[in-house]
Image (cartoon, rainbow over all chains, first blue to last red; front, side, top):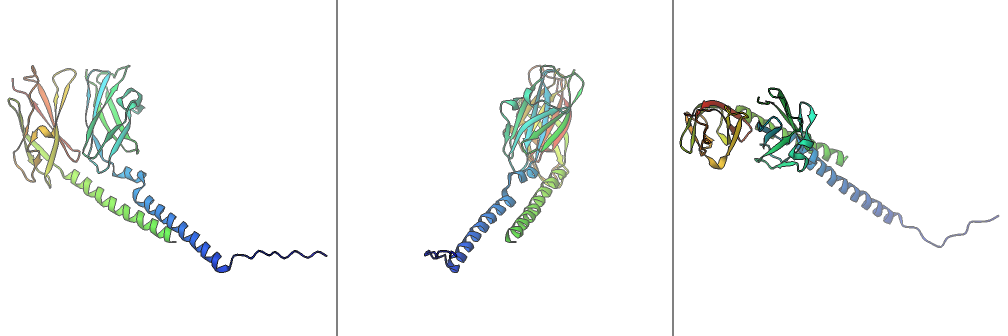
Length: 145
Length: 132
């Protein structure tokens, strides 16, 4: 009958192991606490509800060129990155395709749309501009004859 | 438990603060009310006479002039740096907002839409024929 060999190495004392475990838990809690606070106060997605902007004016230089002027009257910066006309995405035909429109609070800026097919004269156009956070503003403009 | 309490408290506090700020902003915006009484086109300036019938002072940050006679319409935006008396006090009557802007050549007698833009994103419109 074989008896297991007695090991000469001694284990970690219960006090030391308790201290290590307590340290790990405390550090983990601190990290989670910092993350939770950051999430509650500064998560970028929460800024969407603070966005406020509106369309000052829409104009047509011809039946194929449209201009839109946007003003940010909210307390957070806004990036306009998409534009829809009558529900169709016209971003690729607009100046937004090369550079999104970034507006600080109190700033205004314009978007140009060059539509090769042309807009139908006299037809109302439902213009919707959308921010990177998903907020949108919509107006109706009529193409002149 | 500490994390849940912190997270919940943070979210509730943030929601209350944000809701209060936005309600205040939206209420102020809704309470802005300018009545454009008349518009005078003069040499190099346009005088816009307004009554502020709202609950507080209104700050005009831009004026649009839209020539409705031409085809296509011509739109001109004049920003605040060329507007005098852009703050319209509460209760102001026939307040004179002076815009340093000249009628384009050949547009005498044209019908103009004059649009005042406020700092809280409101627009007030008036139609006036330019002098012949």
